Length: 256
Length: 282
Image 1 (spheres, rainbow over the protein chains, first blue to last red):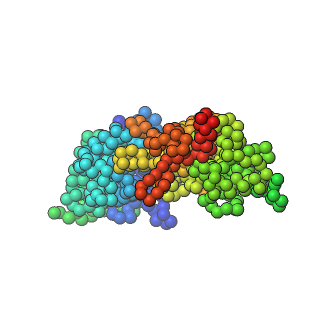
Image 2 (image 1 turned 30 degrees about the vertical axis):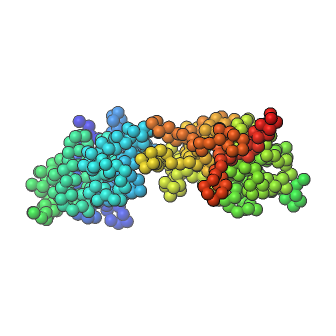
């Protein structure tokens, strides 16, 4: 099997602070990779570099399109990048307000990606939007509701619906459960897990929540000061952590 | 007779040349907004400074000018601009659509089909069709560059979801030459179909925003819509009270304070020509 996304030797400094230090990573189709680590360890920077939003100082990110040809992400033109970001890729922001249009109805938010790639039939756009609301457990009767009137958990589910409506193969998620209370988090994680399995999505998820990583991820990368200090299958890393920082991280999880 | 102390057409030759360069570029890229250096004109922004600058740059001694405001030849804006050019360019003016070589307009396209060789100059208050949707100019430029107009359709979607139809009755966005999204200036949506493959040259000047754009003759101009909610030009459901036209665009005029109203053609030349023909027939 060939990788969907392959990063080699990524490095980036902010002044003298190394945000990424020789990071390499592969993501295979249908695989969920979690990046964990403390605040400031470079997780979000890595996600932004992988998704082409930031340019690394060294190293390259390669992406394989559905036809099988390989592109270097940071050498793609802006038009191609935009198209990629709304068709084959998706990005779920930590704060749903960054990913949603707050003055556009839920239906319009979901329909935007469809219309951006050329859908011009109102009825089918609306039907698709209603179907996705149902899939993310939002009452389809609220299709004309404004996201500003939705709860935090609903906003996050709406953002996920809006991202998945064009059936991407690879989705980047930046702390999707951050800022939600625990019961809402649990439902959201459950929903993400079901969608990932249903759609065969590959996901790169950044989180500081070890429990979320254990629930969702097949593979785990542990980052600290811009370096990947340990990586492997989720259960292996969490049950038998080798690096002292991973040991600290695992030991710090509160047992309920 | 040209007024003394002014160059022909008010603007100096260097400014005209600069505007003509912008016009050539605009004609070469239909629907694309070209920046230009708008000059101080002897009337305030919002009264047609962009349109006047364009007219002043294309007008020649042999031209015959018609100016309309909301379709009418006899409103303040139309009268003063017509007089202005009569004074500073000494050109002939007319109220007859068929006789004019240049028609400067605010808010309407004449009812009579324009022909080859005529130039229609629009006064444009806001050239950017996306400005209510995306406040950043840098971002709207990028959207034009990438032909990324999904956002405009989101606006139409929202209208249909809320009102059951697209609730834009004027300044209805169009796609020019299958490429650029363009604001047709605040003409009624009723006039949009007239822009499509029009034999006359259409020039747009926005003075305050300092932008010029153009639609060359016989260029496709398509109003945005959905397959299952096609574009529908709206017209008041009544005949003109003066000439009886059932095809023309109508103004609603309140005639008393008890709810009385009448509908009359907004194109005064069209209406008076029809009335004259009818009287001649009687």
